[in-house]
Image 1 (cartoon, rainbow, N blue to C red):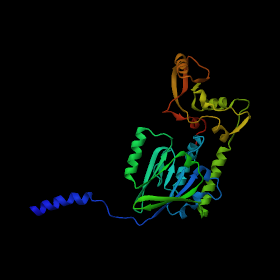
Image 2 (cartoon, helix red, strand yellow):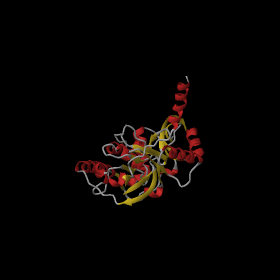
Image 3 (tube, rainbow, N blue to C red):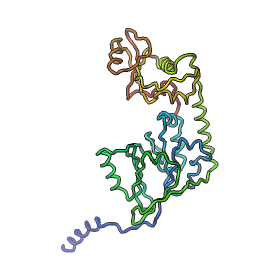
Image 4 (cartoon, rainbow, N blue to C red):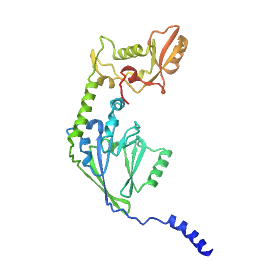
Length: 313
């Protein structure tokens, strides 16, 4: 009986005993590819050299304007990235059923067990942290041995290799080196094929025939979704191009495509007027006694899809 009690007392001590295992790794190499959108146009693209990068590979897809990231996704760029050995993609577009992890801007993070070292990467999208952010950051630190916090300033830097030197499971030092690429021809061709598709799409030309760009877009949407009135925030129109012809690429810099819209039927004219007055919206179309109206709604369809629907994800 005494022997059994001794065994029972020893077990908790063994379970809580700190691990003596010391990883053999003394350096973690991280390859920062920078903007994956810009990489499409590099010669050679850094993506084509990722198979030779022995370490952690990370890039970002934070585009200006944001609709560009949406278009890339619609064309299948996130699926294309699944064919490259990337560990993390910093993007507010969460992607599933791929081998890499999406890291959102607001303290999104990932932890990778790199030969026994719990290496965490977290994205810090703002200069100041809320109390909830501080709590989240504390939890990430507790779950990892080394934490790399990426801020907006680093995002803007050029691609590079960062070496994290490890000693006693902790960060001892870092160094930065130029990113050398050993391009894979097959992967280069895949990137080039996608770039050609993207360029073809963005070079699509519209003839305005004397109309303002906003009038052309709204009238096209109204005809496509069959509404007679569209209420929209005046800030949706960023700039009106002076040219009579514009490309799709030019429109993404002229319109705030992040607005979402919902179709509402049987809307009385007084309800349309009330909506416009209370929300400060601008009204397109001719109000009738009963209207089919397109109104801003965060649960609605993306404005870009209403104007230029794309097949894809």
